[in-house]
Length: 417
Image: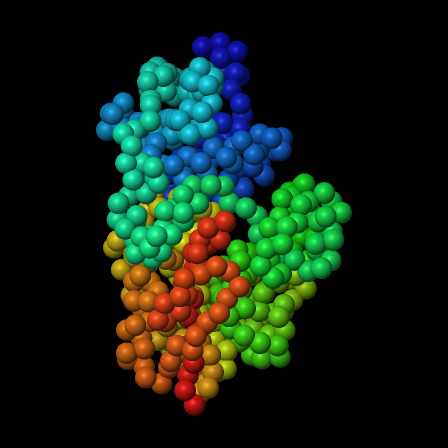
């Protein structure tokens, strides 16, 4: 192996394959894994973009690429080699990069990392071709997930599933000053939904003056809809349950609420506090396991953004569909039922409870609420109108996950006086 052979591959591809292997083997999330790798690698903007495209594209089209590669591989093929082959197959079959260029780049990378297994990479990438067409390979989703999306969206399901195969846009909550700062730095700021804009940056977000000065916060409009749906919270005490990294707590605080954010994982509060400090906002943070009713003073406004499968966020987090199973849906629905019970105990008479999940699964939205309302006649679904496109049902609304919107299920409940 010559030095030329080792050096004749793009470092972006090497980084992409390394990140893919970590996500596929270690079940890490793509976004933080890729961000960490890019921050250390210091690639050019162009190469960083290529690495990002390969990582996310290989994950979005994972099922299709697996079907294409499967006839050419042995069952004991190393997982790290599979990650390299997935990236190569993505470039060849989806991006339609010339085959000889794909083979040359990935074989040279394989020579560096896998030695004699480079012969296997060479043979597979030369022969790999599109799999037999089917709904699953067209949408890169297993049949049971296709059925779940069809149940959620009916005739609009195919548009949602195809949308999830596209790169995610950047959505930012912005102040008026934030809009002006980004535009002065060359960013394209397009109207979105209220204070959440669709942005194409001219420089990394964290290096922008809008972000540094606390005038910008990444959030999907569907997620922000849960904050808006709670109503006018200015001057009101709001409980943000299962608050996680505190993004919704920050958005509630920006709307003038006195927020108490509650989560079982105290480690998330550190990042939330730092982000609130950047935004020049304040909130209180409490640690509590919400599977049992916490000893917290009740409030007129309660937001429960419950842990879920994340099936409505496959565009931004495509690795989720590699791990999602019907059993996981059932387990999450059971957890959500427990958390909703706890959340309800904290709502004062006449108060509002906003239940949200970033999932389109029937069991995690209407299914949970149907059982809850049967058991709790003191609550009623109070109706909901949101700015983003949505589909309404008996208990709430499901955001229409097209155009870069996430799929959320939202329901606003009122506790009778």
